[in-house]
Image 1 (tube, rainbow, N blue to C red):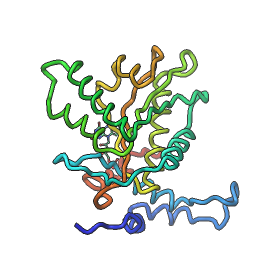
Image 2 (spheres, rainbow, N blue to C red):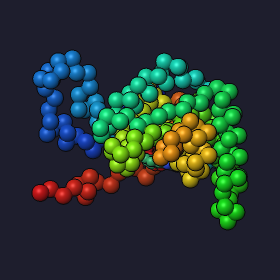
Image 3 (cartoon, helix red, strand yellow):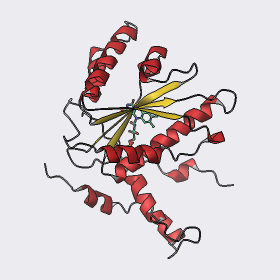
Length: 237
Ligand SMILES: Cc1cc2nc3c(=O)[nH]c(=O)nc-3n(C[C@H](O)[C@H](O)[C@H](O)COP(=O)(O)O)c2cc1C
């Protein structure tokens, strides 16, 4: 297979959002911040470029290369996540990061928790193995927590704020040439799981695990192509 350099794929992305460029020509200087680095076209490209890349493919083969994700990169991604919007400035996102040898512990924990807590009629060996395999084939796993601030902001809004932080994280990962995968499953949000990951408050939540790694193969296209037209999702009043 011939690898398409990620930069080429990024540069090819001048897609359905051409209307942005026509409607909003870029000013030479930004009146609000003179040294603004990314204009709307660049932001659009990054948003379209971001992709879900799982640690393993459908056949269980690794999707991530052996290239390590540096500590500095991980810290920058998390710092970018930390700038997400947050109602009441509660900043509810919490991250528990696994890398290197600790990933083996994570894989064992997921395997055991799935086995112990999945009702017999729902239990699937293949599902258990796949869940553990994500942890075994990733460079980094970031467990996503929501720390609840009772009485201040509705719980739903704190969950939404964490999702905003995850989008910051995923976009930043893409900008660094990293694929990312937000994995969700019922066992992640069990009380025992939450406590294990360090989200111990009574109403804290565990909202999934975010895996990152440099893709081994071509930067993927979006599954089933571009999203359905935004025009069908807008009501103009
Ligand atoms: C909250 C959330 C949870 C997700 N959980 C899963 C998951 O458990 N398994 C999965 O295969 N994909 C999961 N995804 C990723 C979607 O499959 C993916 O975003 C979708 O296929 C579009 O691909 P893209 O991210 O490359 O645009 C999740 C995405 C979000 C936003």
